[in-house]
Image 1 (cartoon, rainbow, N blue to C red):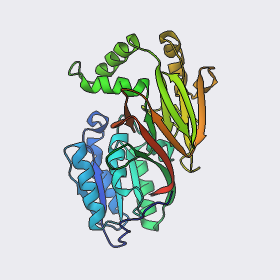
Image 2: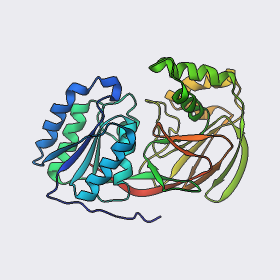
Image 3: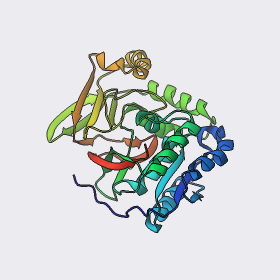
Image 4: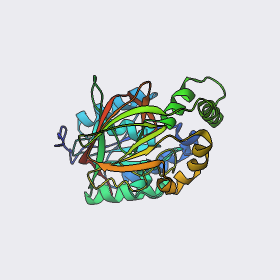
Amino acid sequence: MTVVDHPSVDPDGPVAVLANPTAGRGRHRSLLAPLISRLAVAGREVRLLEAHSAEQAETVCHAAVAGGVAALVAVGGDGTVHRALQAVAGTSIPFGPIPAGTGNDFATDTGYPTDPLAAAEVIAGALHDGRSRPVDLARLTGPTGPPRWYGAVLAAGFDAIVNERANRMRWPRGPRRYDLAILVELARLRPRRYKLRLDGEPYELDAVLVAVGNCPSYGGGMRICPDADPADGLLDVVVGGRLDRRTLIRVKPSIYQGTHLRHPLVSSYRVRTVELAAEGITTYADGERSLDLPVTVTAVPGALRLLR
């Protein structure tokens, strides 16, 4: 698939910075000023984008890109990165993620330091030298509406169902809500019938877990697609078949090491395009609520230029 290059880089434009002050439960809030100072060392004007919701974050990023910027930088976790990617995907405008969230999988999997200030130094150096490198993104489309982009992993099974329940819950607050959602969905666990088409080849199977990875990790370091490479032009599809509750609980910890692929009920495929359908599943891309199934996911080589 050819990347459509919309806005081009304005070499004299500012560096736009999208910052999520609540990322990582606010623990990096005090770092914003020094982060901006490090980026300004590159000799560029730095323009802070204000956003008070996920939707507004996408709007201000699109406006900044359309208005002419030299680069876009996202300070936050995978959710903040996801919103910024919608504006720069398929363009030549370089992008830099500064990991300051609860989950920083895309930044980590594409080689940035885990320390936010160190990541800002890498990005500032790339800005100063005019250096960027291409990486792949995944393009997500449904029967209606515009396409979405993601950088890390699309969850379309048990983890997506847990996220959906947690987002509907009003109590308890914080991480305990997610823990409770896991318990509720474990009690309701059942395999669902999935229809997949992998590079045109049809499959029909029962599964409890389906993930489509451009990068290896999601959920703050869970290596669900451990062999995924965001520079190979391919997607890794991992399917956990008819896992019962006890087996899923036993397999889940091994995902952090990526050794779950050894389990006989777990399968992995490497493809360019995935068509995925099942009843009653809302997908989560980069940890953010995305499209309802059915969807088509396509690997787009070089869809993003990283400031590295």
